[in-house]
Image (cartoon, rainbow, N blue to C red; front, side):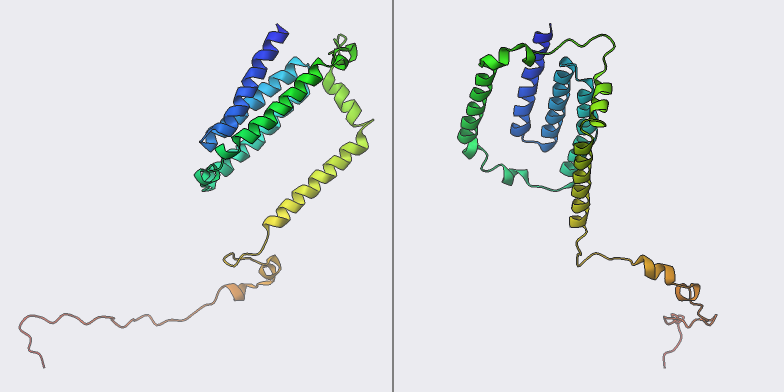
Length: 211
């Protein structure tokens, strides 16, 4: 039953991945990508890697794909112009895909892939891969984990810095100047006369002689 589910999810994943790059509507392509993430999470579940499956759904489907959809729907991008040279590169893409498929089949058929160490081991009762993953991250791989977090932080700060470039039509406020402003600088009392002169002439009555 596990092998049947694996082949079903693998077929759905391949079809969804193909539809991502062939869909004409970018919103449909993003939805097909969500389907591919879900099926990939199911494959992780079959491998008894529940934490990776949940992380794939929560992080990519719940956050990244929502961001993709917002960007696709908010930006006015002419996708027809981007797809003009699509079919011209299809033969080259098919050749590369065939080479990659042949390499994967050769690896799976290699005798090294048939050793017992390459197969899934049945965990003992009460085993939690989430607990084991956390123990490995904060003991054996603590330093690489912190270095990866620092690299992600640097990338996030760099992305923010690149978007904060000065633009001619943008107006900026200096918080220091706002704090130094006093009450008299913001409000100015002006005395005005109560009577105002009419801005238009009164229409003359009928029969009145004009001088």
